[in-house]
Image 1 (cartoon, rainbow, N blue to C red):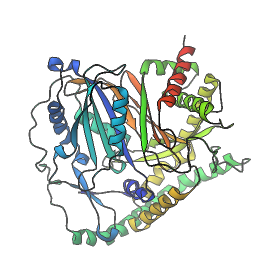
Image 2: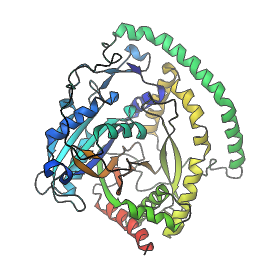
Image 3: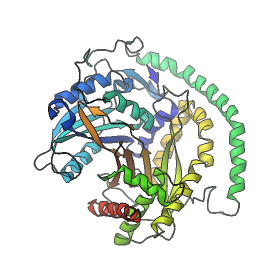
Image 4: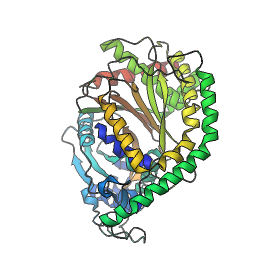
Length: 483
């Protein structure tokens, strides 16, 4: 049994603002590498069953403390059954990209049941008519609550369910329906009375630890505050990084969402994206991605709306996990960076993206993130939880645009990996929309590919084809510069 810290529980409290904090991934596989060149759902299920035994969070469910007196706990689900979490979906003929994206959009819109571990998945077969993907291929869709996963812990799950060789799954040593053999997992769930009895000393202990962490953090925070004041002189409307509180309206930030999402994406050769870094000295892969997305958003606005004469603002999640955070499932913060949709020249756009992302990564928010993480993760529940819920509730009703988009970049495992013998040939991510940030982008990679996946509310676009055309055109613009 392990209690959620304040950062992990924040992703649950944010649901008070009707924000969905679920994240997903979509993996594509080529069955030709498997023994006999074919992979069945039963084989994937068996291999997944073996991996689940290595990842505790996949078998743990939440139990709430009565009266909301403290953070909930992760406890092993004694009735865990993989069959309740992993299903099989067969696409009908022709099994094309539009069918696949419709299926993924429907899966992502499903709620995760709260009476079992906070995830589910689907093995999708019948993928036959998709350019760039093998015929008779299959895909694995996974959806998890953000309280249980971030980029680093997500990679641990990837490693648990995949192999480095294309071998068929071995027979599982024990059924996932059985309780785990680990002593700390085999304890029965605590009673409601015992949870309530823990709450007072737990909150008191958190207050002490949070205060001690704040005292330790004061020197670093004071230094960053003084540095930030020096940097911000001369611009009354912007913060230290030049970001304004009030952001311009765009077609990507409707005043009210429909609650229905559309998901679509494109998979590009990773070698081409890496080569684009050479167009601007010092540019990184992330800078190229920002420039491509900015180019796509600019094209879309030129076609369907007006292009603001200033850069747009994007959130950029960053992992701040330290060496002592191995047991935490979520240790993430976010910084703001700029999307230079106001710049027509692609090389200039890339150079500005490089400079903006550098500034973001070295911003006071990041330099002070690690000290503040210790303060926040130990914050007493009775103080932190009502505050987060209030912020989420106000955020839903606010007309302010916190950011125009969000871009999360999750590096994949840099070597070929296999699921039930089939090689993974593509990986896409799905990030939820929230408030007026109604368009988000997930960037995932494999050793050979890089994907950019857009999630948007239908109030932004009911048909994503035009935006995908803009994304491909922006990529091609940079590709032509390499010739």
